[in-house]
Image 1: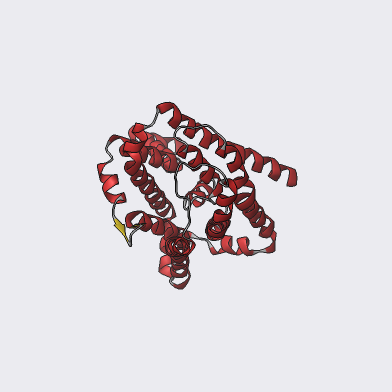
Image 2 (image 1 turned 120 degrees about the horizontal axis):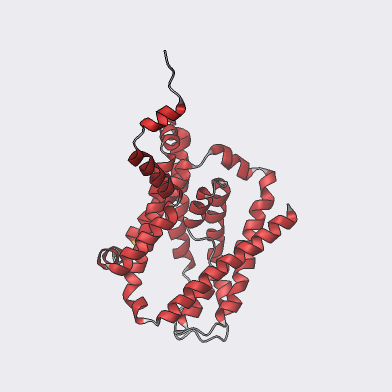
Length: 290
């Protein structure tokens, strides 16, 4: 009886199916930038649905749809969080990594705000925005999503994201006063309501993360579900992040179109340069230490 070689089995798979599988693998591997690109395109081309959703506000200043999106992101992070990774993040061996993350996020990176503040952009609100961009801690959800896509330790990423954002509530007002002391912000209000911000962070990142992790640990079917559909949950999480970007850009679309194209391009380039600078600095430090 003749045996079937692996090559024969491969030949039996239609060419279109092979190509479809390659496309699917590519989309899954690069879903974060693809989702953000789609969100950007829809927001700029047809902003009406996104603008409608972002304008749904409760309790005076809570954009409820975006808050739900963010809560889902961190619920999934808790649900998918591997206990082994969590234990590793809590071990003494991981403390230097966590301490380094805190130092860079809360102390070193905000220092670049002094340079961003002096860039002559029109309107000046762009320079103020770039300065605050340097001050704020790890972007909610994005940090975990990027670490996940790089196959890094999600537990440490989640710990740094939650902890630095909580601590950042108290450090940001100090940085704002230091950076904008005797600086004309063109009438922009830079006040921070600390209790309100703490409550929002607790409800949108801390509670969902703990709830997701608790469900995983207490109910074995939930853990089995999270393991089986880990990729699907990751895609759902990224989709919710893209929804936040879509709503935000839809709401700001008309304002963006009123600005000079050169200024918008300058802001985009400067934002990218900030990230590249941080990556280079962190790479050099890690290489020197390791």
